[in-house]
Length: 446
Ligand code: NAP
Ligand code: HSE
Image (cartoon, rainbow, N blue to C red; front, top):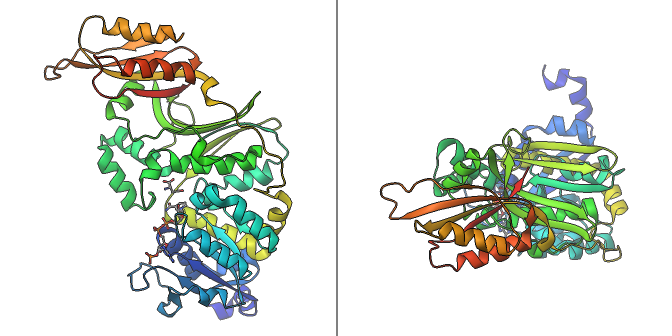
């Protein structure tokens, strides 16, 4: 049907227009621009008005981009946005802290509502940005900052708001999950899998934040604030990444009936909320073990609802753009303003929830030591674990391969113990003369 013959299209022609701007036209920005430019009718139906992409600000306007944004609206001049009173909402899709923070403050001061996917910015400067937005009567929407295309923030803060949350176990970094999946399924090397994740647009500009657990810790800090009211300094969240693991660990995990996932955990304890990020052995066949590629998952336990499991694409251009554009529509129609005012997130006026000590967190552990193939090694390792009260559940030591030069991996699964006890024992073992290289320590989730 031609537009002129379609009564809904005629209605759209007389529809109100709302001008939108984007700052940052990289992986996610291009996805948002594509939805705005190619799916205008669909978005207009949901927003009750047409969303007009009026300005785009980038670092390098000469860069070739695979998106049909009219060149005359692309510039480096933020003033084109701040000086246009008809631009109501700005989508901020540049990464990192600066100049993202200064640009966000400038846009708020110019009366713009913001939509962002920048979790690093929120994890570091949420109090400043949210207090400023409240002072100025503006809003900040940030669904895309956690778990990409999965609408987890709306679910936690709105759909599940009747609950007292007990725990969250989540896979929050698509890049790490992609790397682990590629290594396990295709025997890809760690380096190959990292560069493929970069090529596919999953990784941060500096992928170190993805693989060392920082990105997941930033997202966990945001989730923990929404679910538990915790004001966590993301940098203080105990975290380990996947950057020290080897293919051998994935194989040992499988032999033991597990798969390794980078888990972000928030759980209520008698002493407060405990947060950590660590590579974890999860049981083969469990929902978390089946999350593959760049997908993310969030398993939430609430006192009324019980356990709810969300999974889906956690990174990448269009899944993230899906969440950004939904926020954009919510902002344009006024829904964001209501939740923003009601929830009072990251307010200095709201009481904070205590964070509990990671040292005392209980659980089982997977340990791998590369040791010299000599007498008394196993006895010494067992002795150091025993001195800290860590009990051994099972041991794997395969015979050294012919060219192994007398070094063998010793893999130990422990019974239930605490993080503190395991760390002390492993520190002591790492100093023993027969150790060859650093040890690996991972939590086990049965
Ligand atoms: P990206 O591909 O690196 O794109 C960043 C964009 O920001 C580029 O267009 C760049 O301009 C622009 N930019 C950088 N500095 C600027 C400045 N000073 N002024 C104006 N523009 C500037 O990043 P991305 O992957 O789209 O990610 C954007 C944000 O979304 C990040 O915070 C990221 O953490 C978050 N996020 C990403 C994903 C994902 O899957 N990629 C998922 C969820 C959240 P030029 O193009 O001219 O260089
Ligand atoms: N680099 C991030 C990830 C993008 O891999 O999860 C999504 O936030």
